[in-house]
Image (cartoon, rainbow, N blue to C red; front, side, top):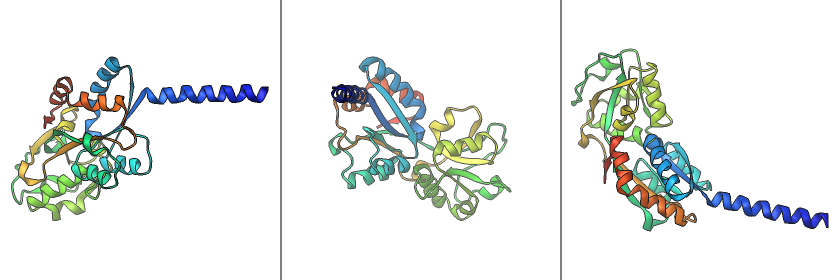
Length: 252
């Protein structure tokens, strides 16, 4: 009898735990989307009754976690490559994939810096950095770092930048280094620079100096739920578009 009651209680607990999980929408998103998605998530929670739990990091980190079995339902990447990575492994629902946003790449300095920069071929990056270093995402796997490498290569100064590079694990980690004055300059997205008064945009990289900055979104395979689809729909709606625009993103 005691065993039966214990088994019944255990089954009831599992049922309630499953319901709790069903009511929680887990969204993996590129770090640069942090502020905008937190605002959008609050509105979605109010309207849908679902709790949204975000995990923000480099797109590469999140894609690898999904590949390893992390139970995310929605993935938003800061580039096409890491969404393609999951698509090639059949880890997203292809029909739900949509290119949501665009962004710009900027060179930032601490807010009190007086440095002036004109981003033209062969610009004096060494003079800008002096004895300091340049912070951006790791070009080996972080999207902002790959865009930065492309832009610096296009402008003919990658050979100067490479030995000076601080390879941060996300765009926000690179931004923090500039905010703290630990480096004299960094390369981040315009939207990241816009959320802090501790840095200033010294220059914006020409759009043709790097691949277009695109943010795709999709449902994760095996996680195609009504709540997840509703969230994707909300991301494409006019209210979300207004939030994204307020933070400086362009709408695809």
